[in-house]
Length: 296
Image 1 (cartoon, helix red, strand yellow):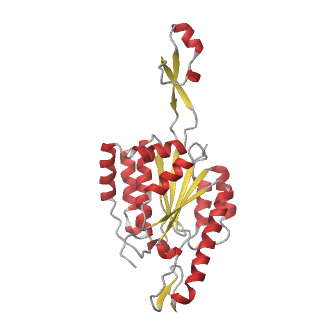
Image 2: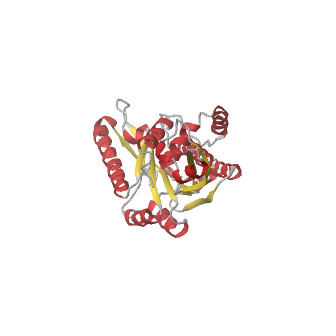
Image 3: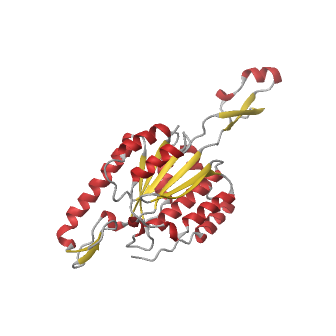
């Protein structure tokens, strides 16, 4: 197993450079358009221009001022977003450069940056078979660095996996109508979590799950000779011949993923699968763009 190195400083520096160039605005814009505000506040009036939509003219105000006037509305941006990060043993695996948990930490760091720039607040729940760390949903750069500090702490990683337990915690602890984004490989997901998820879906806007996968989670390599493998949640090793089981392994992995995605979909929660040997920006932006205006 690779050594756990959670250095998010290069990611933060990269985001700060993007901010200066304003190229991070694409991610911020995608997030804002998908997770729309809960309403609009009236700010005032301005004169109508040829580039404006005539349907937005306020005719009563126009009669009073003797000019065509547009109402200026400001979107309410007071959304509370919580990330659920799986830090269990299966997330400490890599067959490529990044452990799944390192990749997940970078995803959350980037999305938190976009969320706070959009005017919303972000919180973090790190879990295994218990709640390891919880940061409330807040805004501001100081809070952002508190999230980064937690994501970068190797002592908070490792352990067994119990998704039902974290859902029970959410249902009793998080503010109603929070947006919840689950980040996990969902390996070791046992029965019993769905009823708790149904309660969560009623209480929260559980709109998105990010399924983080290593290439070996999806497909077994061939022509490697015999290998020793182990289950991250149970002791002991097994000697296998990949050529004999690769086809069944791949099919079983796909079946499990599709079943999980289907269960989430029943509760109006979309799933974006991210693979650790590929960039996460494009799949997330694609999801935001294709689902624009969908969430309320």
